[in-house]
Image (cartoon, rainbow, N blue to C red; front, side, top):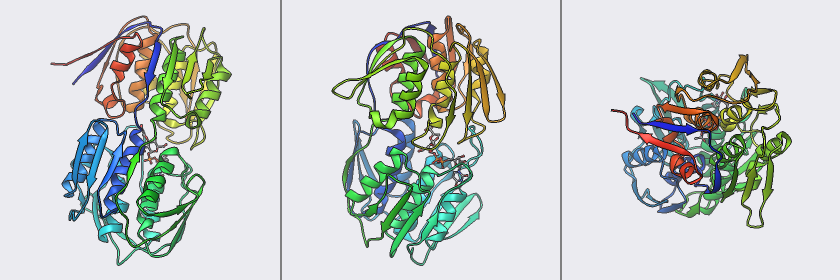
Length: 422
Ligand code: EPU
């Protein structure tokens, strides 16, 4: 297993170009299963999760060819309808093939995802939505077996205990494109990745309205065709570099991100004292001349502060000038990074779903372990601030979601290297 070795502290400086969004790419790749022709998806980051999705599509009999960041998906005459445990267990987003397979074949067998380190991640909302469209779904031997005599449009409330669900909205929206009649999804997720998926489906011939709002209307069509689409930039990668720039008191120009997708983060950081300017070409210059002031945050569904930046924000606030409270409303157990940040000298305690962070003046390098994708990014930020050497093990988590993280940070002046563990 590879490790990252980072020598801190470093002020990161320079320019970084943001890659295409992982969480937009995965459902869009799954959506291509709905069509009868080839789709070309551009800007897809070459990440481990994308490779897993390619593996799932190929196992279904779909032809997939990738060149650089472009992926061509040809679902013509694919016959498969099974997504096996070996893929689904490594990537929960595999669940988003369920809706398309069911709509296309009237049958799908998809492994249940199983446990997750960021807390329980049930799929009851996905099942509720698909059942409302006329699917019968049972669990047998660890697999969801979904069947239908033909999906029919329905009005469905998709809210759950933590608000809307991104991939449940994606699954139901995809299935509804080929259902008979009109579907209305109430309390739909409006994350930019859901909007991007809707825009891809519309290019494929789907009839969708309201996809930037909490009420999405889908008028079913008989068939969909292939389409060409460029995925949106990765707002979480952009946010991670923005937070790293603030934490290291750096000066970084973030290129290729969409400012509108980052509003909650940028406003919070301005409030904390960061200097953020938007250039005429829409690149974002982030500077922090000094330690930031504490700002309490609560993670919420979009356009609220994203849970996928909570851990990285905590790394930044671990060296703020005072006490910060970070409340997690999406995954109340997503706090595995606290213990590791504390090993680096942070002072963070947990009360229920709120972390109380007593800002310290500096962190110190240590051997730490990544527990999930965004926790890994928080440890990287911690290591950039810390005095001395930090070794982060289980870095494969980072590779699931960040394209060339260490190369991009090296270019910004970080002393970071990947070490192969024998
Ligand atoms: N939930 C349910 N029942 C369901 C589905 C979700 O109770 O059937 C709960 C979840 O347990 C959670 C909340 O609803 O408490 C929201 O989960 P959501 O379904 O929105 O999450 P997701 O669609 O499975 C996507 C991203 C996650 C991101 C969340 C929230 C992808 C591939 N994954 O997951 O990204 O945290 O939305 O924004 O798009 C990451 O990239 O690190 C990551 C975990």
